[in-house]
Image 1 (cartoon, rainbow, N blue to C red):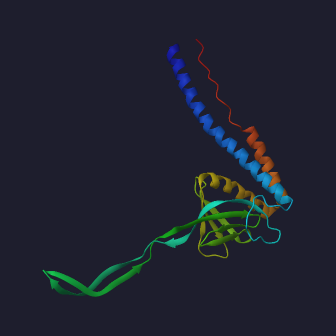
Image 2: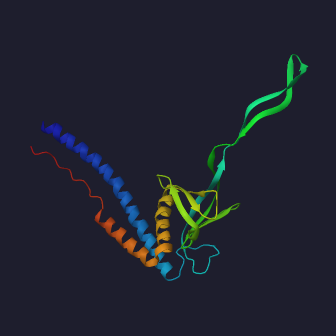
Image 3: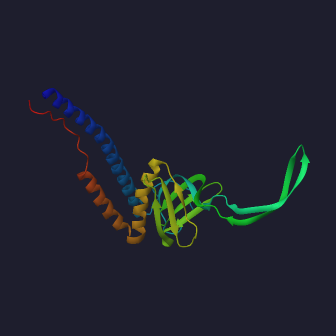
Length: 224
């Protein structure tokens, strides 16, 4: 019984160790992200941009983050006529006939979708989110912000603003999407509550992270 009990314990420990590596990597990344955000807002408090950029900024606007993303906007799939046609056919040769006439029926619009466009620079500031591409530019101002939605893996975002009927958003890589998600939350916090609220929030998050660091599992073999 001792051999099998030890084997089971070792297998469970090995599985727990693998999960620990994943959890600890995520934890480490979050600590790095929130420290990066704090550094950016410390510069913002001094009136300095956190990253180099070519953005034409408004008075008092500070650039917090810059990355790459793919713009998308609301659109529809191709529509189609639903109904019947009428007309007559003209004999051509060898029994082949060419049909001419008119289409009768109703045109049905395609399904609503997000149409993905070009990849370009995404800039997050204390006032807005900006997309700058070769063919498209777009901004989502926090002053007109109605909300946002994100995919479960934090890569795809749709933004709702009051001055635009059609929704639009940005698709990120997994690494940039995770970072953007946390930066955006604090940028909105800054716009609504002020920069001191951001520092209070970040201090709380970093304290919780320090307390919640995943613990490496210890192999405990059953007593003989």
